[in-house]
Length: 416
Image (cartoon, rainbow, N blue to C red):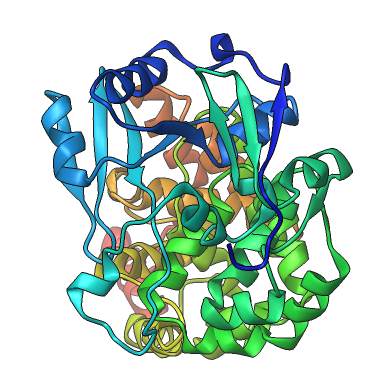
């Protein structure tokens, strides 16, 4: 099929015991009802690399409605290609049907977007060889149609088929390649590396919502700093983030901070990273003034101008837009030497995001160390301690001098 060699079968590389019990149950249920089923994709790759997978995917010859009928908590999802989410406890396993390539690529009819096929067809539609490994739990064999196992051992990322053709089919494969080499101990196969550079500009043709989804996966998986540096290495930053300088220390520090938060199971968002990436633009366009003398209207206009340009490439939802604008405009209230209405700022629903941005700005030498530390300490105080700290930071008001004329009259009156 597709000019590729017949599959190789490898025993004694994985044990069914390495597959979580709920996944084994899903596969067993499909087999018991007469269907073929395999564990597939990144989970097999990760197990071979000695990495514990975050999730496991199952592929089968059962159709979506047939899969759904076998499990009490199963939901058919997807528009272009339907698949099933099988829920067990709080976990969800994706179960998909073997796919095949449409013969007429120009057609966008619903029938051709849901083409089901065989395992031989299915493997070719997977982008990289290391993601096209199937584990048969009955025979305990890894089934390899395209040399993926050898590439795992060589720590090599290689396209299935001609990389120029595969990237032309889907330009997002450039970003997927960046994500994999950033997250995993892999190097790019030379043909793939050349194709990524050759077709980088094709990312501009991808729908903004899809690019947002790809960047979510890339930056929020614990390898954001590596991904950012690799995007810079392949000249992709200027495509994804127009007008942003490549030497952006705040953006890189934000990526590192995001990785630290992922490692500690803390919340992370793409919106915060966008705020850090575009901060220098906002500061310049809005004539940022840490004394608080800048116009709010001008700040918002500057923010809108920056985000309008970004939306041409990448989807920025209204919620993300509000998050970014408020994180930016709160900076003057946090960095001001004598902040006003401190408690209102502390209760602001974007305070934490704005505070985190201030701390990162301070870390790269771009904001007041004194005020970053002051807000840090303030959050650990009780209400009484906060009142004292706020009072101490407020400027001492001088007593007003009485005018000379009033003073003379007062003296004359007292003499009389």
